[in-house]
Image (cartoon, rainbow, N blue to C red; front, side, top):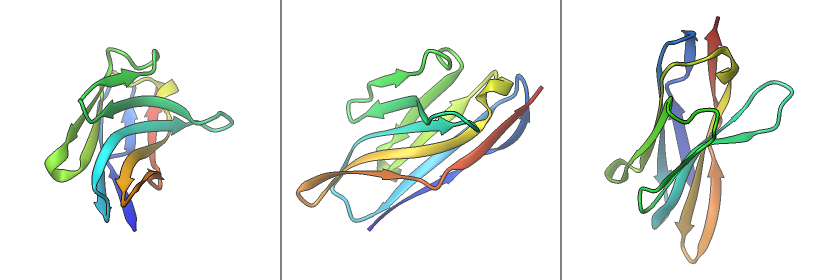
Amino acid sequence: QVQLAESGGGLVQAGGSLRLSCAASGRFFSINAMGWYRQAPGKQRELVAVINSDYNTNYADSVKGRFTISRDNAKNTVYLQMNSLKPEDTAVYYCNADLEVLITREIYWGQGTQVTVSS
């Protein structure tokens, strides 16, 4: 069983910063990639940022230059530093992990953490 524990969401004023964390625990061999998605009310879930095992990153155009994704392999944790937040960043943010589990590759999701940016 694998769990993803997210933390760091909250309420912040426009222009402020938040840092999200997601720690993977349980039975798995390795992490192929971890990332963050978000879903605003009435909208589809969208990719925010992802980082793979080679530390290559990919960002949504809307967050480039403002958000930074990083990972700590020793802690099986991925971080999302969010700066210069805008009201349109308001959403539930979900952690995603692509893991090697036994002989299969499996995708896991966190429970989501609310990020609210006030204008």
